[in-house]
Figure 1 (cartoon, rainbow, N blue to C red):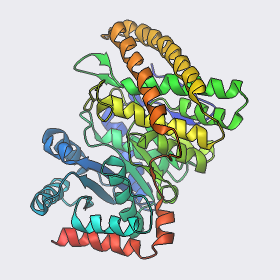
Figure 2: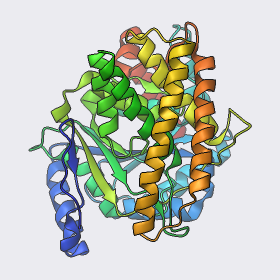
Figure 3: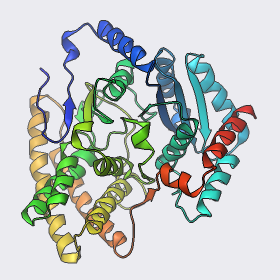
Figure 4: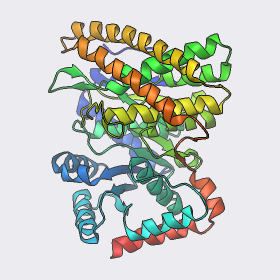
Length: 421
């Protein structure tokens, strides 16, 4: 049976609809969203790398489901990893065919010459545009959405979701699109259980982020850093902080700085923490389980896989602490690393009980070995973040528009020219 637990910090919206007929529930949800969309236009932003596009079975399923949705104003695809115009044109036409005219679709060609020229113009004003990747793609596509100024709500999700369906999207959108709610940001969560492996996934969330923010919240509380205690307690309140799915108002999104490395999700949560009061923030259970591609641990390569992910996330948190009054040094970080690891071992034992009771495969030795690797990655993050380094954030579009008043016109012209070519 689904649980009802509510954290005092943010609202949790649970999966309580299993008692209903699935098709009737979906029909009712989409009927409500059709009504909301008459007043609040809803866009979906899909950051897609060429590797996602080439995984045609998954990508085509996502677009097939989107083509059946009638409450969407527009689908925006932020396409990365494509440099040839001919390949871009084929992909754009394929997406347009899949959507089948139910709603508008625009593909933002991130690596196209027009977008690259716009980023060069921004860079010349000494404004960071980051480096190629999901964060930069999301940031560019958001700029295009803001430039058109047609949508009130933007939902974002990844393009490698094997278990995607229309209920998943409807639940992601509903809390923010509902005009009777007071929610401006809603984060998705789910059980990262592989239906093929019958095992727990989500290693970085389970074995790093969750025990790390938990011990940081305790350390900050014990040392009297009240605001940082609130910050880490807020992050701890999210059941799946690294989920790539969230929905927010465009008014909020305009003022958010976007991380261009693997800290995108936790940096977004932090930006929301700085801008909203807690009652305007929610998380929602999107699915019974969730399957997508898995990253390798990459122990010996700090620029790949989970190694880079953990380092980037840890660097963000360490930088945030220093920029909010914590004088980090080797001794403090050494204490933090050991405290994290002991906490991770406690969480691993809890996960083992959960797996055993649910007849899931659980390798206790491998879980503990992974935590040990994450412990060493945390020290790598500290070594890399020493000195006058800032978080890897691209400034909000509010700031960019202030510096370059004509930038929105340039974005619209670039995307429309790419579609006309």
